[in-house]
Structure formats: structure tokens, C-alpha cells
Length: 323
Image (cartoon, rainbow, N blue to C red; front, side, top):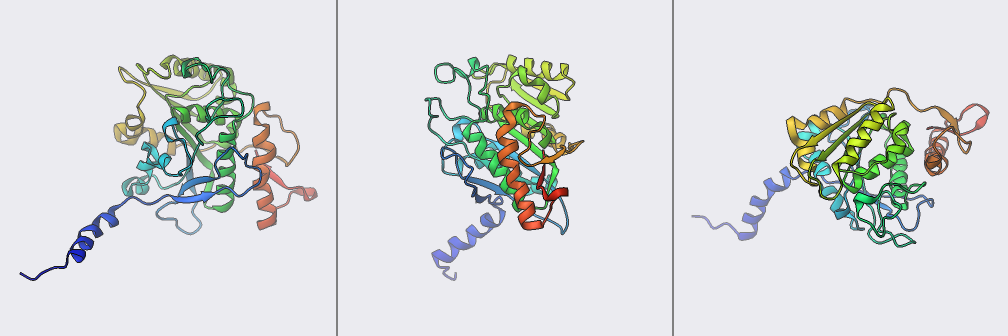
């Protein structure tokens, strides 16, 4: 028998594994000086496996749970949805871009744990008692907003009428908060076992919502999702609540894989019905007060990009941007 060098044997055995490995998320970095010093500059982005010339494909934003906080720019993409969307089978079935920002670990200036949404009483109470969010987005969510703005600038193949917002646990709360602050920018949202505010039902009613929750969740009471779904429905919104009987907090895999990826099939079928109105940059729009940062600082970044790189000007040479 001919002797095969050990190194050659190892490489030959490893080659198929490399070929079958899921596509890698590429690191991105927020460049704008608008980013709060306490937020992450790093994010991960997955591009479609195949992007025909002139094609426009959706963007999925995923906000991770508390267990993936940090600055390694790695843990969030290992959570269920980002990992699924990187698999070859799902890249063929649901071709899209995937943006995964990361919430930093640590605390806010007033001692509350960093979160996509900052809550009154957050420092001294369990999540079940977090009922009222701060009036402005947290620094961590501002970082995610700026990451989105820069990704949209750099990837003209993203269909801005199919930007989908998703999140799990802490990220589900973030999805509710972001959707309420900027409802006209999203085609749909999925939130798993998150905390929402019924007081923002009117804003959330402008975004098709799918809520998922375990009936025995010990961390986030399922009643929060029940109350929110009712309030959004009463406000005229398109909302569905899927409740898993006898299940606790860890529902990510079930949510995104059951019934032949039914949740993803629903998500990718949504399209923003009416683009937000175009208003002059810097001018006050008729928007919830909580949206001020997003409207006056984040989206003008996109407007400046249009002017500087594409020469797009509205009448009167005033840069304009969709809101």
C-alpha cells in the first residue's frame, strides 16, 4: 500500500468540510462620527449568494438577545436566525442581505445594563417589570440605526421596500422599539419573546407584525405579547400572535424552522405598501417625538450620500430623503 503523508491526508479530509461550510458574514464598520462612543462600530453583513445584475433583494435586520452582548462581532451571527440564513439551502430559498449589529456589554451612564431599549426601573427590577421605555432610542439602538444607514448607502441592490426587522428576547424588545420609532421604513417585523409597549400600538399598527411567545416563559410573561397583539389589532394593525403551549423562553429554533420555515415564508412575502413621504433634510416631519434622532441624524446620512455620490437633488437644491 502506498504511503500517504499525514498532512496530505488531513487536507484531503478537510476539503469537503470547507466546501460545505456556511457562507461567512463579512465584518462592517460604522464610519460616521454620529455614532455614540458607547455603541459598537462593528457589525456583520451577509450578502446574497447570487446577485444578478440589476436585481433588488430584501434586507433582514436581526437584533440578538442579551447572551450575545459584547464587542467580539461574532456571537450574534451564531444565534438561530442569522445561522439559518447563512445556510446554502436557505440562501437559495430566501435570497437576501442580512445585517447583524451587536449591543455592547456594560452599563449606561446611569448604571442600567446596556440594552437595545432602555427602560425605566431597568436597574432594579427584572424584565417582567420593565413597562415604560425611555423617550429616545438607546445608544445601542442608535448604533444599529447608523449601521443600517451605511449598509443602505453601500449596497444599492437592497430593495428598500423589503427591509425586514427581526429580534429575539432583548432583540425582540428592540424590534418593537425600532419599529415604533420608524414604522414607515419597514415592510414587516418578527419579534420573539420580547417586551413591547401597548402605548405605542398606534405606531406599531403601521408595520405588519408577527409575535411569537412561549406560554410558560419565566423571563418575559406571555401576557405582554397578548396585550400588545390586542392593542395593535385594535389600532387597525396587521398582527398575528403565535403562542407555544408549555414552552419557556428559548423559542428561536421553533419559531424560525417549524412548518417548513413558515415564519420566514410570511416575512419574505411582505412588501412596504406605501413608501414614507419625502421631506427636506433637517425639517421637522409629523413623526413621533421618539423618532427625532433617526429622522434628523440617521437618514440625512443617506441623503448626503445620494447627493455626494449620485447627484440626487430635489427642487431648490435641497437634499431629500425618504422617511
